[in-house]
Length: 65
Image (cartoon, rainbow, N blue to C red; front, top):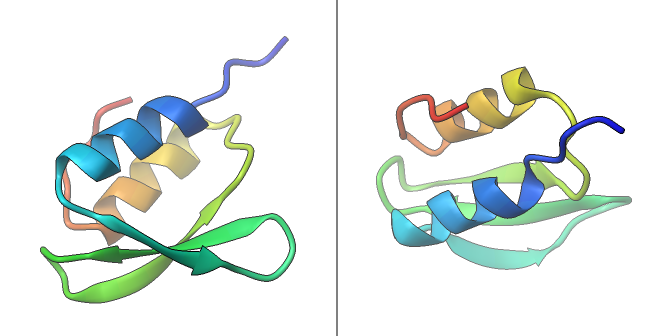
């Protein structure tokens, strides 16, 4: 079974002050980053550490995985 990074990623985003905005199309959520002042998509199931780190970069945060 592949590791899932979704829960840990969301915990990091919340700790950094990011806010869940709404459910997006399909299996994505839309989040807002106060650091970059932009919205960014977060897939519900994240099985790749590269994807998780890319989302952190979009939020203006350093790599964590």
